[in-house]
Image (cartoon, rainbow, N blue to C red; front, side, top):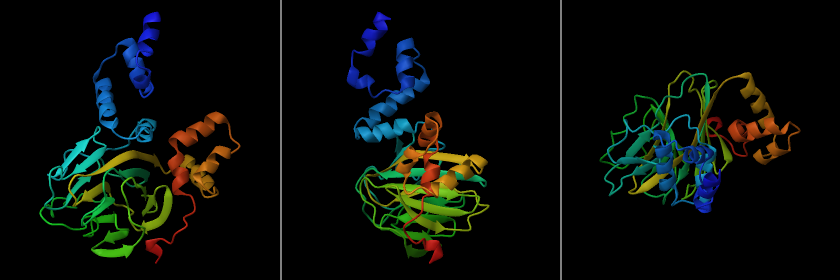
Length: 290
């Protein structure tokens, strides 16, 4: 025990940022493949702010990540396929990345994407698409890719929402550090967005029965977007109860004041907080209702 105790305190700064799984693996000598992957993620994340790293650790279980098999040629993935680097050298067109699995009927999905670089150029976008979208079609030209056809729905950093080549004003402009949340309700066929935790309202309806993929795109050189979390749940009684409570909360912080057992509250705040968030009353009109 003395040896373990000494090893743990040898570098308190390093160990303070390790996950419990990594710490236990080091103590008991389990140096398997999973540990190696987590150490690589830690090294790549160390250049960012501490709060950023903590959020990644906090939401360690990702429902999906970016798919390395369907990337545009001008895209690289880092941080265990969670961060997209567009046009690493220079840009001569529009590049995109899709999620690693389809978001199917009957599920509720929420994910957050952080603008991890300067946000500029013809367009940088976040949205969803079907498997019929050709992400390489405009690799030698600059355009607002997501929403240019009927197979995709996209939100531009300028604040416009795109679908079928049509554009509607939807939000204010994105900047470096902005976090865009995306909620896809496949049961009701609705797509909604959040900007820095502020609900922006429903952007698109009638998406029922479609198998959709998360997608991001950029025309600008050396730009980055990082997937901070990707969560999902079935349309269940648990979901309906959380949704009903969320509609009655003034903000997400009010969840801490609910008169429920500490263990239940901890589970709700750590695992299901996004369900409450997506059902908070929106302060904006939705594009779909205009």
